Image 1 (cartoon, rainbow, N blue to C red):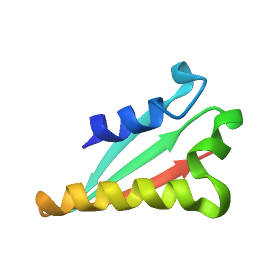
Image 2 (image 1 turned 90 degrees about the horizontal axis):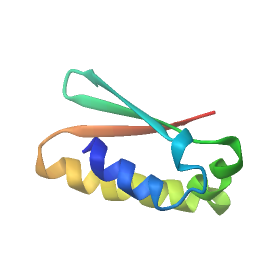
Image 3 (image 1 turned 120 degrees about the vertical axis):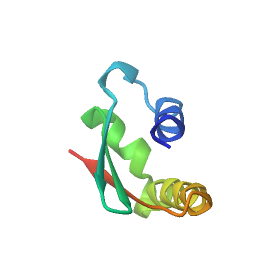
Length: 76
């Protein structure tokens, strides 16, 4: 799951070396914290959060196959 998210994020940003994704498990929930360079944050979130919402939708549908819940947080 983390690898799929990482490949999506890496294809969007300019500063690939500053991308870090940390995974935390809390019961059935998986929390993925995404941290990118400050200049790339706008690309990842998008206008009115549309790109971030699309990323969350894709990850939610992938996690449903595994009967898990994924929460994606974008960290400054």
